[in-house]
Length: 422
Image (cartoon, rainbow, N blue to C red; front, side, top):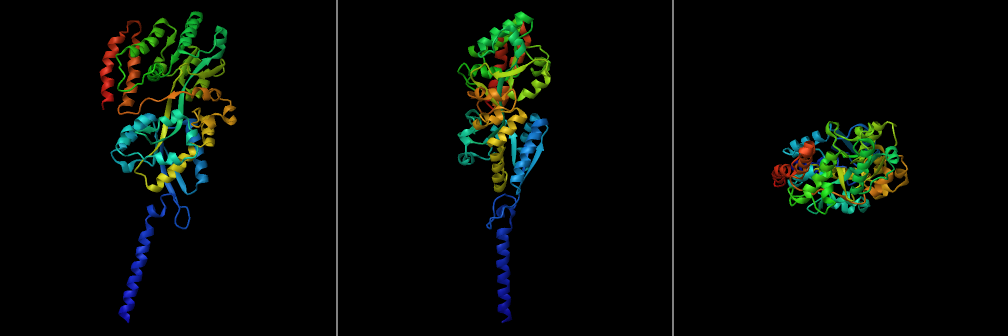
């Protein structure tokens, strides 16, 4: 009798331990996942988010994140500022060798993530976007930039395109309209130079200028594009002629044209819409500054996307997807756009009166400015090749009248082709 009772007690204990082990793992119960348990109770999930936002941009991100956590108390989002884009890229690259040390999600330029995606380190968001309500409301140019090998790997977030910032008072005094084509840019810039002795226009990013020029001529900046070919020479010479004749300017040590515009050393410049705050600070009420769509028909889409790493737990991925849904919602994007100057990623946000009437330079023109956006191909070596194009342009323009375009293009072609082959 005692023996049978002992056996029964042992069996009971075994069943208890088995039941506990089956439900005790936090990954399976949802304690670290943000999923619901069998009783419907929501459990906690902690996700880490690497970003490179600073100043007003970081404050806006903190506000949105706090609002998200209030709505989703079972999820904790830890924002980890990596100082800047350069430092963020370096940390992502360095940590790839130890995937377990990667965060749940990160902000990143798509071309940074090409190799991590190929190595299976990035979570595939295709099913998530298929089920995301209003995904088609996200601007097509931004959606295209998230796709590699017909799969979606990111969600657009702090996005931008290029616009034309200009001194409205000086333009009126000149008796000219805002240029809407590259040809009109040359005409207005020459007229301004003749009237004032100052250059009319500059381009913040020479890499953007070059790829925008050739894209508007029907070609893509990819491994098939001939750096030594006629169109490449045309793109370089168009800008070089302007510099040599004095109606175009290069930023030089100023890096960006916002200060040059503010100091009235140039009539207008093409740069990121996200530079609005810097423009207004530089102008500081000295004249009326305004923005217009880029004079190029097709404009480049830029800015970072949000990626989730595959090393995250299933529940962290689910929590991250809820966070992505919140950050890219219409309401969040209106707030983000007004506070930071970035382009709201949704058409409905761009058209909303709350955004349109927010009093920014950019809001009234962005619907038109974002109608025809392009992105450079997401291929291996694309990031390095794109940056090298900027160096090539700087080299040519710095040589001025002495520039040997053919020689410079020949010298850089091998380097750029080498990046594409990596």
